[in-house]
Image 1 (cartoon, rainbow, N blue to C red):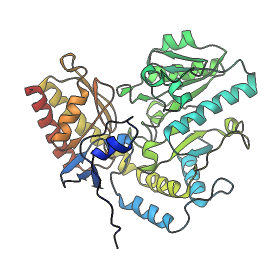
Image 2: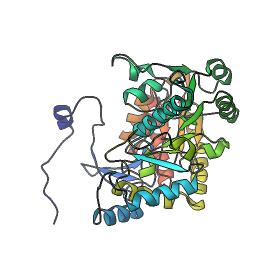
Image 3: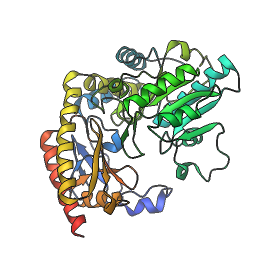
Image 4: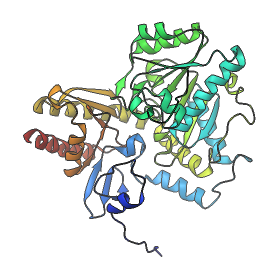
Length: 406
């Protein structure tokens, strides 16, 4: 029997919720694959993927099965005990990556918080308290906790909350000379997104990441890759570092890892992990059986040749069509990104109008994202069907045409 709910509407948000978001005027109520329906029954194609989270679309049968089976078995026991889904997922992540150890948490911010704390702890234990400086990139995004927002290179998110965490330097992304100039023996970590997500979907140059790896080795600093947005098959490899052949010391994952169920993970080596001894770091929900059961199902589906090669093929479809739209209407200066994380950089005449394009797209029945005011971002399901790609991009083109016509 279905539970009777009180009716709610979009106006309730403005009455009851903290006003830190400005959600769309419509409320999605149901999703299936890459399609979503709102309260009025209107159907939209989803190229936003819950901000690169819904890696297998909505209500994927493998995830529904994993969640319902686990929901009928065991929900939560805390880290006073371990549990089977945690152990299975950890095994599989270690087998699939450079990592030897995993720490589970609930979000990308928490995964990065753990990564940054580990980096500082390792340097503190090995070299003393002076070696605590972190170098990160301008326009980077690493989460919303005070530590992660301080490491993130966007002052609009970190200003106005009192004193910031000290010892953090921001340098231009993809600029190896700037990194060379900034790094010293006081540096404990260099933190980079292999593809800057919120900063405009900017992939790193291979030489940049290779150079960063070398500089970190020379200065006894750790290389931390934030793969919260770029990881879990998003680029056509399980993690973006695999495209570059550059291995980090610490990697953070979340978003697509749970396919829509909240989970984060920090991956690292045995040698580094031992610095987080019993009692040094923790989380109540981390490694929750429900989250780990779902993430294991995500990994089983995503980490297959069919899905990963499919991501690369779908990338080509999106890029070709988006470039054609950009040329025809004069709206994009370039289409960039890897796999199914794509950014359409708006041309000079349209700079600052990403939200206008996004709203027009929603009106035409397709959900897209922005990455700053100058980039329209696409982060669809990794298994989005070709028919949905075609229909969604038809709708997107109609939206662009309307915007251009004013």
